[in-house]
Length: 328
Image (cartoon, rainbow, N blue to C red; front, side, top):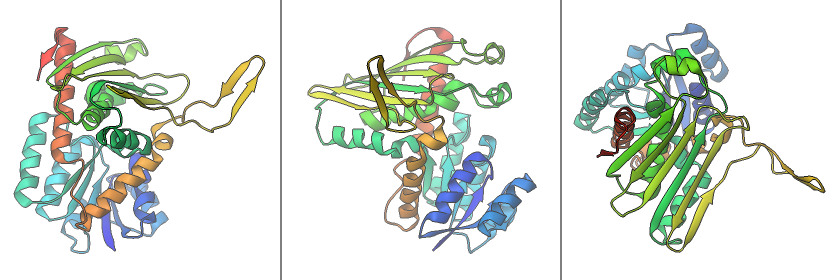
């Protein structure tokens, strides 16, 4: 049984706490959060300890850490965990500054500690099947990839101001998905964006609607479309076109019942938000990390994947500002 220290008792920490507890090989040993009430509620629910950062890192009974705290704490916590030889699961991103990420990854490399970065969409069963079928040659050579990602409603302006911007906060998942599906590193990126959903987001210096095109060495092209608003639910789809056919993964709906009648057809909306849409993905990525802790696997999504996704986000911002395609 592996004892886990959970850093962050907020929304995403609560999701992970369930998966840690439900897994037969892991135990939620302790909770670390500066917000005492949140830590207490989670610790009481799972009969876990409440610890400080220093206590958790130095506790010899803890085998691994799950970092789901505020973004600006990730890199420092990763470095501390590496120095204390704890195996590390960290929610994306490692940091919002690329140089800080690179410095952090050097520390992890120095101590030779496994680091898994939580780009959960890689572990969605639908997207995973697209990747598997493509890799086995089902549709031949990839020609174009379309990724649609639209949130049901925009975040608060307060969140936008500390998020690093839409590309680093939201599109970063799609950058990782494009690299994962195609299996190559893009050589150019072109981004356009607008402020159409909430004027306050524009006043904060960000966008809420975007379109990004990336080109890959094989000739394949990936197009990503993002919006902070989708009146019909959480819109998450991918379509991969190849020389011999098409692979697509559509939305997961609130239910699978369809009504067909003379006036037309009616189906349920997509799941409302990421907590519902990616429930199975969160479970699957934790299963993988347990395999990492047990030395049955190495991290499929490593620190270098986190670095590369952030690099693409930075270059997308560069393209947005210049209005030009940026070579990578």
